[in-house]
Length: 244
Length: 393
Image 1 (tube, chains in turn yellow, cyan):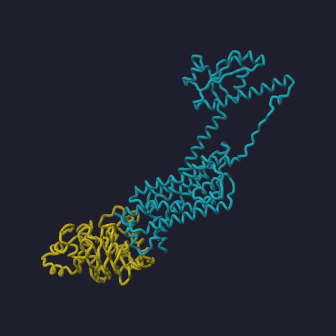
Image 2 (cartoon, chains in turn green, purple):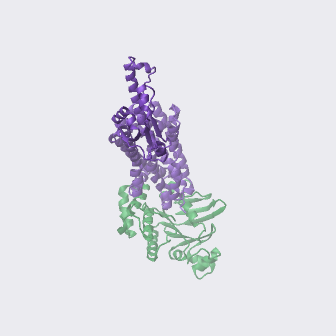
Image 3 (cartoon, one colour):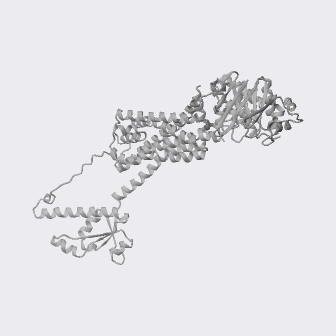
């Protein structure tokens, strides 16, 4: 479970995040929806402790992520916006590196990595060097290494970026599997379809503030809209920076 | 396994798979010094042999005016060439058709017979380097002929030849073959520093600016490992590559010392186990210092290319003590050993001379460089903790 209260982050004179508060529950997929530049990535970076908030708090399963970043990261799988692999290492070596950094013993690593390779359908590329992987293959490796320590909470920044239709479908199915396992999945997106297709709960964010929270159905009712797209445009006040 | 070791092994394996890094860090870097050296020594050797043994062909005008002199010169290696065409030595030299002409005037024989000073002329152009060596050799031959003749004349008159030599100068050069080589090899410490620099450079860039450019730094920092620990692993890997490079360089230099015909140059280069051990000891903290500095500088760069540019500029720093010592020969004082780079330079030069380095000097160098290395490490760790570091875009 991820709980965020009154998060603030300023870069120079730019107020990137201005009092963001929400909760992402276990066994649910929570979507952070907002136009480009709304503060999604900065918010997530504070959640996975890459940045320190200027004000506010982040709790992961009750652990204060600002005070104890290392303990928080243990319970967290992260697919950041930057998802580069080590090109001179194989897919398996890339994943193993992160498993070791999580302090996993060799006996625990092997079955876990094999299981992930199986679920993500990447056995054929497991022992190939990451040089020349397609975008879809790279995301799979990045996902596997984010999940290798079996984290209870998962944060994904624009996971659908650059994926083709098949890869996107596979990704969505995989996120649903993670939800059914009782994990807390939080992802950001500026793509309406992705949010509508996946989310149990949507946090709409614009100009660094949360403008609405609810299930897709609740958002439709609140804005008296027929489609989610209309609802979002209504909430954000503009359709700039959104994609259907 | 400790997280720092995990980072260390991953960086080592990844970089060993990079052909460019291996080529530059482990082959070009350590070998460029020894190869350059072997070439330089080869050139010097050839010059030396030419000067000592090669016949000396010189145009002579008036060979018949002094047959005895010419016979003596021929015995010393002079090859008499015909006079320059047109007859005038001055014009031939000025027009650069020849660099040196020996002129024996007609009056030579007359003066010689009377026992008066008999003049010969050497026509040359001192602004042309080509004339320097033949001139020196010919003058030496003429001087010897003169002193032999003088001694004979005095004996004939019943005088002791020593009368004409009121002062005798004897030169007693205290240089040993090994200390003479120190002059030649004073540049050796710089090559070692350069090797360490090149050996670590690619990893320093790859593990910071490179990692950020590849967008892999942000996921890495999302792991439950403190940034200091990650930095420690990366610095260890950079240091390891630099040290391997240094070992290869020392080995290559000792091979040059063993297989080049140094005796002919009157110098000795013996880089034995004692030399290797003390050099490695002196260089160890410097290697860490350079790795930390390189990482620090590379961490500020936005891209691999930018980091390369910065580090090329940083490479100028180690040249400074080498130049300093080359142009202003300082007398080594203990405080100098405290200064990083200068201490290593002085220490290794002492070892090359075949002298033993005092424990105080070793301790001072280790202390001074280690403290500086620790400060550089702390500064790098401080930069590593900044939020800006991880952001790729």
